[in-house]
Amino acid sequence: MEILNAIALTMLKPQMSPLQLMQLYQEAGSATAIVENRKHIENVIPEATPHLKQMLSGLDNALVLAEQELKFCEAHSIKALHFGCEDYPQRLTHCEDAPLVLYFCGNGNLNPSKVISIIGTRQCTAYGQDIIRHFIEDLKKTNPDILVISGLAYGVDIQAHRNALTVGMDTVGVLAHGLDSIYPSIHRNTAKEMVTHGGLLSEYPRGTRPEKRNFVQRNRIVAGMSDATILVESAAKGGGLITCDIANSYSRDVFAFPGAVNAPYSAGCNNLIRKQGAQLITSAEDFIIEMGWENDQILEKAKSEGIERQLFPELSPDETLIVEALKERDLHVNEIAIRTNLPIATINSALFMLEMNGVVLSMAGGSYHLLN
Image 1 (cartoon, one colour):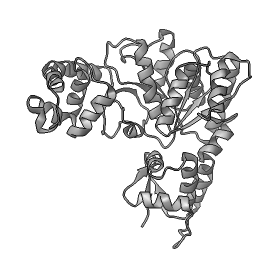
Image 2: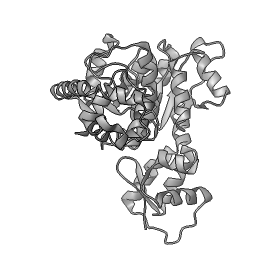
Image 3: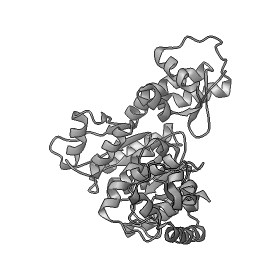
Image 4: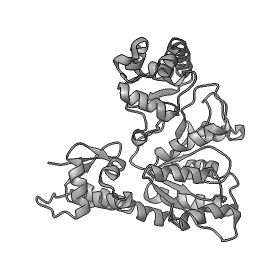
């Protein structure tokens, strides 16, 4: 059973880093291949080191722990998702340090067509709260199916979750501890509501405490699951800036709201914009235009009225690159970005025109199919 074996690998002592574990998984081809060949790992990994062989000797104990973890998940309506399974967040599969296993409690779709993360300081000011409220309200009017991701922390995170719930948008909290507890505990009621309007997600098994290093590691999931990361407020240093750096490393779009020059919790945003680590936005309209999402309503109307395909449409250079990329197989927008080196906003605009001309078709989960 792949999920059992994958969980066991995450419980090896000493633990490998997410990057090391993913490299091991990719080389072997599956968690099951590693577990079944644990006594002769060179059968699937010829370059296996003595250290790896010694570590894998602990798999018998790890499998017992994995069985206990699965029983806990079954008893508490938690889904254990392994890398590559259908419900695993597909955007994360393009990140080299993606978690091998994720635990999810909720009813939300982790692979909708649009996902954003809203992040920032734990000391969210009235200015930041107003930005979040208006931003989410306006997003709801034009793109109601966006999934809002954050970290359930104080400040910007909890404001993002609560405002999303208020307007009826799904929201997922990525936690830095096991799903058997909520930190901070004061957010327990909000977390309970999120389970029925999104959910709670963690790479950590039950009993894992919210240690400092876990929060930094958690940030890569927030960034990797999202099409765009939006920094609302941040001091000159902070976890939000780390998440933005990670998002940039994943070639994801990063945006920041500017603030007053002397405002301490706008310093991080202003610096990031100045250093071109984020695009400046002042409203949901700015964001929607930059992402190319303003065309969705027009496209839906065109679909309802019927789209007549142009038999020989003239393609722009950007459209040609995208078509060439889609000839191999169906791709998500983020995959297209990796293959074409085009900005997400450019890709979205080009895909809109291609779909209007009947060249491509948008599929469930946000992928695109090239029509013959």
